[in-house]
Image (cartoon, rainbow, N blue to C red; front, side, top):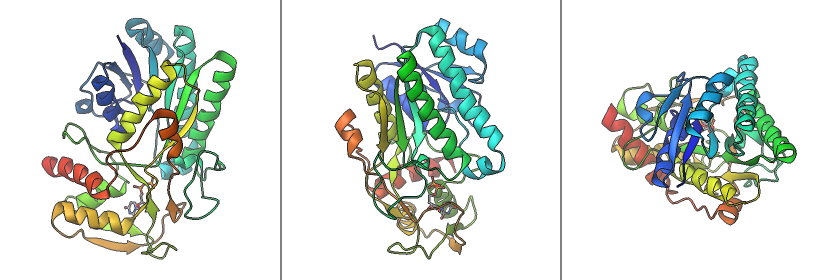
Length: 327
Ligand code: UDP
């Protein structure tokens, strides 16, 4: 019996898709989410415990009740701009919350955690435009990225001292929606390119503002490595199996190894929608490098993970279908 898995932030975008993948692999996901940004409708494959991961009593009772075999840790604040304006909130919740979680795990004797990290822990690419592997220097350029890097460091220290089995998964740009249409991306406020472009096409939002058209990229707009959320979800289940099977702890990039520009994403939205996406050129957004692309081979070597939904039309098409049916 695979058993229960505690999923912090399981009512959020990547967490909820991962709960579905866990259920598909025979686990029962138990979501702990403070529901500040989570959605009740996203929790479909196991119980929801509403509460904060910094609440030690709550965590102790969840561990006692469900006896989870492992933790998948998504719960965090993730708005870069807000993290610059209010770093205390990010360090208290992301870092403080993780320490509270890890201490509850120690009390409960639960020693396996997969952590939702990010390519934002790298900061600016040392070689502009070149794929970044896991050995790339980590010099995050905002408190959000620094909070995630601190957590990676804490996990490694807990591994060395207490035997914690940990895997940090550094996502590049999560995008798309559950191909079955059961889940999708719904942030408020929304800051991400794909849902904003879809909203512009649907007329539920204003024209997309393209942040920078003068980057040294083929079409002048930023290049990112868009990775389908269902592929990300599957990687978490593989990482869990890897750790449960005694595999080495560490960190892995999750990306496709291919980049798409903002204009290419807009083109994919236009093909999915069958209509133009209203857009306007806007100034560069502070802290946006021209290109961020993963060197993605290590996750394949360690986990046997190969992203399946890599084509930008496929990624955007799943997102389009989800948004269009809700509009
Ligand atoms: N972007 C844009 N307009 C928007 C939102 C995003 O041009 O309204 C660009 C942004 O500059 C970046 C890419 O789209 O190059 C992806 O941004 P997103 O916020 O989705 O993810 P991030 O790369 O910040 O994690």
